[in-house]
Length: 167
Image (cartoon, rainbow, N blue to C red; front, side, top):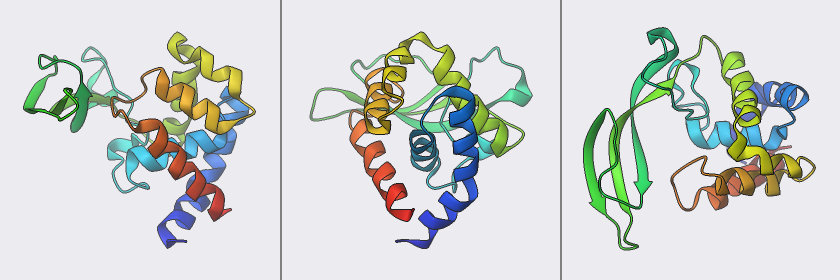
């Protein structure tokens, strides 16, 4: 087991478990998404562990402009700044862009917002039919469009398995 996995689980696992009690989102999904979206905590600018986007109208302390990658089915996506667009072999378009993301004062605030975000967005409602099965919950969140990466569900469930092995 790579040491960074154990360190991440030890450091953020309790927050994910508290989040499950508050929101009903399985702790393994929360911790898996935090690990995947933040590169095991190495890329969480202003504590955005989950890659949650922000509206441009959100007050400045609560948002930040970050570079990200997106995969869309069309070449005319709208972002604050498009750096590049490349057609993929599957006919979709890979973007490198600057886009608005939420910013938090702490990791605790980020983890709490993750559960609230999933709970209050109707498109994720079907996931809450699977709270007893974190893998089904994760697949439902991915199917609802949490990320634009077509392989997001497989990648997320792989990260979740690694976290489970870490104990």
